[in-house]
Structure formats: structure tokens, C-alpha cells
Image 1 (tube, one colour):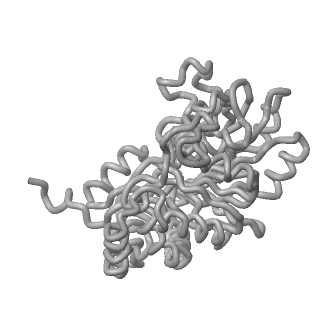
Image 2: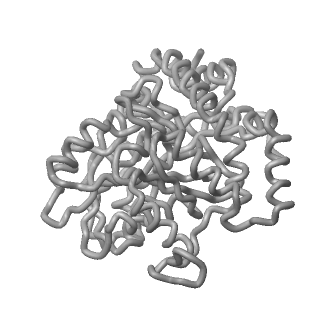
Image 3: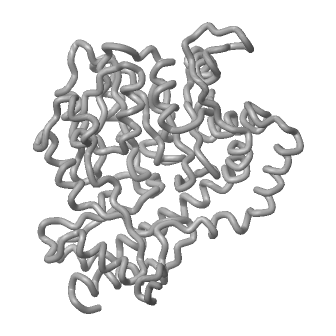
Length: 384
């Protein structure tokens, strides 16, 4: 048995706060699918595709089985394939890299901005060659890459923009909504996302009717209609049950995002005294447009304690935390053959040793946030 200090008092994510108020709606939506029996590409899928695309300010949404599939199929539908170079940040979840590689394209990894953890667009510009066809910005932790800077870079070098918006559902910056900047975008509906299903799911968003039609074919065995296979496709469809759940949750997403942003502001204020101890948050350059899928702090070299010690002591105090992500893509063992080595991307490598994600979810209370920060103060200062 664990003692009281080891029991979780503040979880990293609390699904109950989201689901309990809408439980009846969720059950009704699921039951409706069961009664209709349209489990594959049913009405709820089409309804959700249209609703989510509309919310993001684009014309088309095509539901797929995961965020990874959304990257792969979306890139393929945009014409990216064997031999094409795609620039992406090394500071991202491995699914971004996998999605690119599954198209047969060549991933060109670049470093990140140490303050925001987002792709360094100056580094991206230096990585452009005659084979570069696309740039794949990752809107990380709920904050978008600057649309104006991204569009300027793409226009100057004739690059296709494909957004990885897996952590940025309805995030905004400079008048743009995540998923509306480039040719197409990929989203994930993994349960812990700001808009999460009860299982796996994803979507490709685009303003291009031809791209949309291609993704619809690719996700369904390459068949624009039953038993006619015009593309080399796969089986990657968003389940009707998951779409039904997402349809219920989508109207609440903006409210949930606002709750996260408000919680982040409380964290920011309370954490200010800890800057003297070398602890500070990843910068928000998007004001209320940041939807804080994650709230991430840096435990820098100036801190008297290392990150592992701090995380262990938070755990002992009943506070869950995470690290997103402990190993950059270029240092993952499975991808050594790409030829990258330690030292190639110093900002991402330093961040991977410093970042720590604190509890963040809609409805987290001021008392809980205060307890998390007070615990950090006690750990680092040795007292409250």
C-alpha cells in the first residue's frame, strides 16, 4: 500500500470534471449510434467533420483513425511523396516524424526556439534546398507558430504549409485559427487532447476540394466509391462512435480552452517568485489565443535542484507531472539511421532536459494551482 504522501491529490489530467456535466448527452449520443447501427462512416462522422471544419474556418474536414494518419494521408493528398524534403521541428512527439516518413518523403529536422519551444523558422529557412517541398510547423503545447512569419517563409520559397495542430484545437494567433494557415492540417483526438474522443481519432482539415476528395479516398482503401479503388489507400476511418462523442464535446471546447488559459495566467503569476530559482514557464506569445493543452515550465541550469529531484518530490506530495518530451526526435534510437547526432540541435536538447509539464485541465481550481506552486516553492526554497 502507498502512504498518504504518495497518493495522488492533484492529477495531471482530470477527465471527470469534463465528462460528468455532459454524461447524459454522451450516453444518448452513443446509444443513438448503437440503435442506428451505422458504425463505419455513419452520420455522426459527416456531422462532426462539417462542424469541426466550420469551427476552424476551413471548408473541409475528413475524419481518420489518428493524428498520425492525418499527417500521412494529408501530406499524400497534398502531393508529398518519395524524394520530397519536408522540414519539421525535432522538438515534437514522434508521430510527426512518423507521419512524414510514411509518405516516403525525407524528413529534414530543425531546432526550436528555446523560449517558446516552437519551430525556429530561421533555422528552417537555412535548411531549405532545391528538394524542399513542404514545411510542417507543429503548434506545440496549444500555441501556434506565428502565421505571418510562416506564410512569409513559405511564399518566399514556394513551400507548401502543412500544419500539425494535434495540440491546438481552436488555438488562435494573429487572426488565424490553427488549421487554417496552410494547404492542410492534421489534428488528433487522443483522449487527453483539448478535444478528446473516448479512443483514437484524427482529422485532416483543408480548404482545397481536391485534397479533401483525395483524403476521403485514401482513408477508405483508396476507394472514392465502394469497390472502385483508384488510389493505393488504407483503412483509416474515424469511428462513428468516436465522432458522436466529439459532436457532444465540440460546443464546449471554447469554454474549456478559456478555462485552461485562465489557469495558465494564475500559474504565471504565482510562479514569478520562482524565477529567482531558475524556474520559469515557456513563453506565451499568443495571449488568449494560447489554449494550453499543456502548461510547461523550464527547470533551468540556474535552479539549485535538478528536474528529476523536483518531479520526484512533487510525486511524493501527490502531484502528477509529465515531460513533453524527454528525447528529441533526432536522438530517438529507431531513427539514428537518419544521420543526426547529439549536439545537432542544442536548443531542443537543452529543453528536453529542463521542461516539466504541470497539472492542466479545464476546471482545475485556484486552490489546486496554488498548492502545486506552493509545493514547488517548498521544494526549491526549502520553505513556503
